[in-house]
Structure formats: C-alpha cells, structure tokens
Length: 165
Image (cartoon, rainbow, N blue to C red; front, side, top):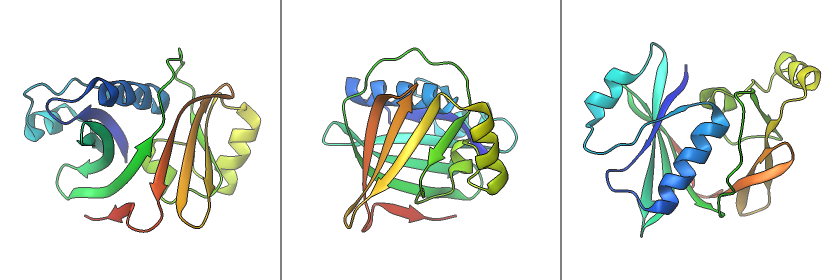
C-alpha cells in the first residue's frame, strides 16, 4: 500500500498549500484541494490499497503529516518543521531515499531500501532523491530534484514520529 491522495486541513494557509502541492508532485501523489470534503468523501476517491495523507497546521504553518488507512485510522503521524519551498517542474520519476529513514519509505511510494531496491536506484539514477541525515536531536529530510533542494523537513527525534493503526 502507498499514499494515493494528499490534501490539507480545511482552510490552509498559502504556505501549507505550497508544501502540499510540492510534496505531492515530488512523491507522485494526487493533490486534492480539501474545501468542504469530509474524510469519507476523500476515502471514496482512494484507489484500492491506497492511503490518505493530510497536512495539518500549527499556528498557520504546516506542521503535521498524517498517513491514514481508511479502515484502521492514523497509521503514521509526523510532526515537522519545513524550510521554504522552491517551485521546480518535476516529472513522474521514482523517488529514492538515501540514508536510514525513520519510517519505511515504501509507504510514501518510494523505492524500497532493500538490496534490490538500492540496486535498481543505482541502475536508473533517479532524479528525485530524499537525503536522510540525523544528529542527536533532529532527523532532516532533504527533498532534491536533479540535485536542487526543493524543501527540507526537520523532524524531532523525541516525539516527532508516532505509529498507530
């Protein structure tokens, strides 16, 4: 299963919409403007074996990414800070995570971090790469298209990621 649709909370700020559109283009997800759509209406738009992703705000800034299974509820909750988003035209090429991600990148629709997945990544030389770095306090995800940073996400190691479902 992977994410099929990304949306936002009901009345998102411009910054949240900008991040949602960039993240959906980067990860090859469908972006849907939320408006007055209920969760049930959003679930009905999902394909078989797809999750819903919602970006929520804290004090007017994008801050929480929830990955939701239509029947099990929230399966992954990520609290983050984000840098400014750079507008870049992107294709539908596959995404590869470089480094140890704090979650399974396959849920995001990226190539698996297995031996076979990494071998395929070396063979196709993907344009979309997420570089994962960490220190004692933070995990930094650097989303790059053709080696240009599109945006960076900082996730606090302590309490920044929760699993459910």
